[in-house]
Structure formats: structure tokens, C-alpha cells
Length: 196
Image 1 (cartoon, helix red, strand yellow):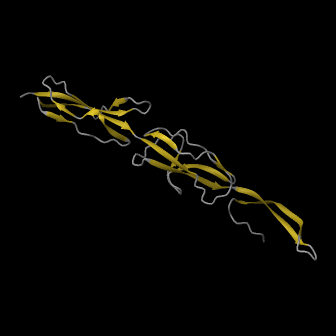
Image 2 (image 1 turned 90 degrees about the vertical axis):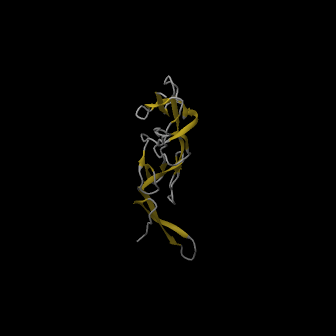
Image 3 (image 1 turned 45 degrees about the vertical axis):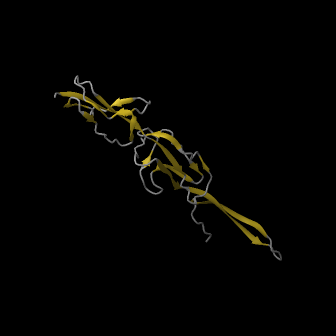
């Protein structure tokens, strides 16, 4: 009975293509007894799924030390849903809120759209409807525990102009006629304006 070395290699799928790169920190040379079964430990990596079909997890330890076990991990893909988060906010919305699909784990979200809305400043995309972490076009996708991640638009209401017009009732009639107007007024979008 002899002891011979065996090679155990772990590979993670590249971000840029469908090829794989070795995880040098986890790959190693092992030793075992000739003509016994060697079984690799299946590791877990955030954002990756084990590819059982491509991998050879176990094998008979050959007397010449030629056994090589290779375990492959595919990079997960995700959907990023975009919520305009209007919640009763007035004003026309422009810009796309279509979901971003086939986003790879650790991919830069460079194609996040810019939105606009009358009376509001677009503050960007966040991981929660209120508060949360800001996500920009330089952020990478790292939410490995979810297949779909929703990002929410945040808005800040701005000062806009509004007009008050004054009408007086005609004598002997239920009709009104225009008297004057004040066009030099400003207020915050979607707040209540009251004439005093």
C-alpha cells in the first residue's frame, strides 16, 4: 500500500466571459492511499453555484499520482427591478424603469438609468424605498442571497412657481369675472398652498 499525491482544483467562472479561473488560495496538493476513493470537499462561494455536471468530485487515487479533481462554480445572474417610488408624487416621469436582466454577480451596474420628474430632483437609486444604500453606475452587484433585487428611486421636492387668480362675482349673476393675479409665488412641490 502506497501513498501518492492528488491535485484538487477549484475554479470560478470569469466575469468577462464563460471561461473559468483557478482559485489559487483554495486549490491544493493532497496525499492519499493508492486505489482508494478520494472525494473533494465542495466549497461554497457567495454569488456562485456549483457546476456538478462539469466537475469531477471524486476518483480513484492512481499509483502514479495522476488523479486531478476539478470543481467548477458558475457565476450567478440576477434581475434588478427598478421602482420609480412615486407614492403619490405629481409630475410627469421620464426615463426607463424596465428591469435590468442577466446581471452577473460582481458586475458593475453601469447601465442604471437616470430619471426625471417635474417638480423633483432625482437623488439616485437606493436599496430601500426610504433610506437604504445608494447604488450608482459604479456600484457592483453583490446581493448574492436574492435572485431579484429591487432598487428604488429617491426624490427631493423643489421650489416651483404657482399663481393665485382672483375672481369677483358679477352683480345679479352667478358668473365670475377675472380681477387680478399674483404670479410671483413659490412653494415646494406637492405641499399645500393656502390663500391668506
